[in-house]
Image (cartoon, rainbow, N blue to C red):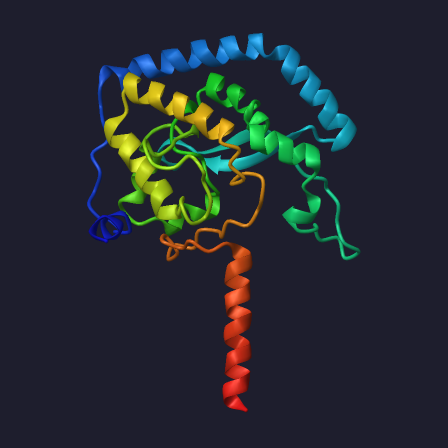
Length: 249
């Protein structure tokens, strides 16, 4: 029980980002070499996926979104689209669950939708390993500790070393994610980057459904320890409302 309590603790101490020749120079050189090589080697795969995107999802082929990078600077992140642009009669988009396609689920499950991010790594807005770039709307919601996740370049992946590879809302809360980011910021090294890459392959082969659904609740600054999905939260709220009506009557 004591161990679980420690894992659920919300820390407020200020991190100390690691500052070495690896973080200042070598890591960026490796990013350029690895991303450049990957772009060339995977170019046939990229071309096939672009063609399939055009056939299945139509234009535009890429999903481009503004995200906060190092020191909070905004950049444009590239991904392959996983959803259709279908709308309701009033012009509003259908829900993500209604718009995602089987091909899109496949892209997310295999993380092939992230391949265009190699161009972000090559141009210096991202790194191979680093905290995931989240929504711009989250910037004012971080506490002072978690703001330090932006003290390094965002990356294609950043995992908790150890623990389960089967990720869902109950095993990967926002606090878990942010604390993993801070751990990386304070301990970044070549060895840790290698471990993160290996962990990424383990996650891919674990068939985690975390990225294939849109049920994870959005971060609101107060739900760091939330383990319920959006559906569970809505169900709980409906149950409370029904109970209140019964009580009032």
